[in-house]
Image (cartoon, rainbow over all chains, first blue to last red; front, side):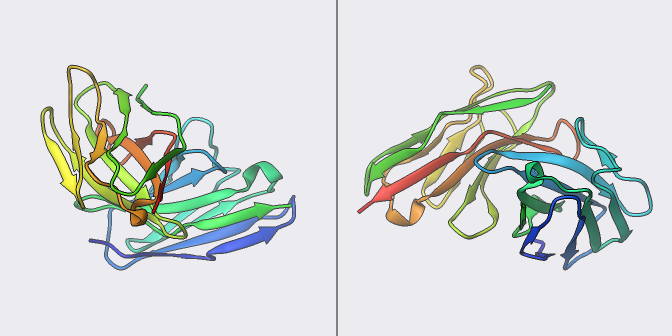
Length: 111
Length: 112
């Protein structure tokens, strides 16, 4: 199993600013994943992050808007840049070991 | 591309009622299928999974059978409890490493 923590758990931000979300795992994992859950909607994969290489982004998501760092095998960050109200969502970090585990999420509200 | 369609919600049931939440999928290859649950105020948890056709996943009284012929993975429980109130997500994975494709989620509310 894997225990995942995220910081912050929630935040309220002004439009035009940026927020960096941290994800920490209690074991070393090759891949980490970032998902978005917009209000009342399902989860959508933003990108896959491997340690030591550029993240791979899904269609509709770009590095300039969602830069990701993966400095080691237990940690990753996702930055939501130049935020607008449409970025208000829950952002979840996930890892896959024997199954896919999810962090508790970061609830972001952009005013 | 891959997609998952869940029955429209929300679903409201009385305690001890029978539950079915329908899930159908479209995928290339041979995906694994999952049900995830999100209890109020908590994170997403794996409820059950099936990795190949005709497999039955089960956990906490919930069951789902991987039906390749009908591309379905319906979630069932014979007698729901108030504590089962949550959002349930059907998902598929395995066609691309680590990537899960989720359905839209079904809100279940169980009344005493």
